[in-house]
Length: 314
Image (cartoon, rainbow, N blue to C red; front, side, top):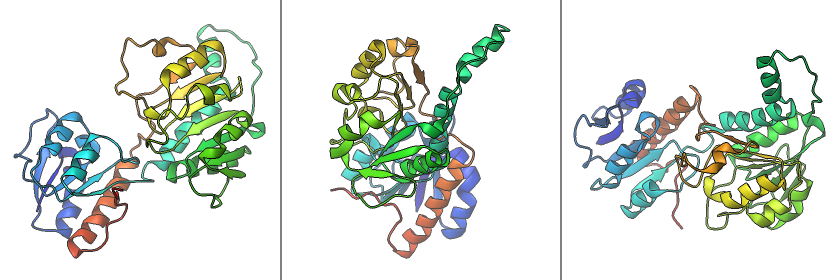
């Protein structure tokens, strides 16, 4: 049984995997994009850590017969998944592994905003002693769109700061920390109530450009939009127009329809946009959680048991 994975991932987690399956062999991608041995005949693929790059994905989609692929992702869209499904490989992913970090990121931006840290930092650089009117999250309403592992964690943290929390999900089953729950059909009813809209919903045909001109027009002019989900959920051109005209106050974007986002796009220069390069999940704690999921699934795989977090093609 041969595994394709990154060199650094192997160094950290290869030994416990070898204890589970002593006969494992490895095809390792190096920092320079070369391979320790050809990966085309690998049975197992681990798209995580230092393997998460174009050279690895390019090689994976050319593999002859991968039987199982595991990824660090919280979402399950993109050409890697399409290729694995086409090759009829089992595919598992890592929902929840990055939930603490992504939720902290969203709440951190809200705190940064209401406490006006950006402006205060500018005043410090100018040696200016000037009081600013600060706000609190306690009298604000958050709308969390998508209540999976990440969205639920965001809702819990928001509630901890005293916020009123609205939530959108497919099911109306109660969620801890959510004061009012609805489905996508209720989005345009919830948007005018929200001081911040936080997107944590998977990409799908139903959610493509979910936040477009109509949705943005329905938001408060003082509202903040935070996208930690997928770039395709927001119509970027409509968002630019809303930011230019003051239809909404500001946006924090960690994900984009195209990544990297083009360096010459004018979104970079808009004063009311905060751009980060898909790093909300970054943390030393993230990859060990992914590895723990993979190792548990490796035990299940060799025993012929059902794998956790399997992606089912419908």
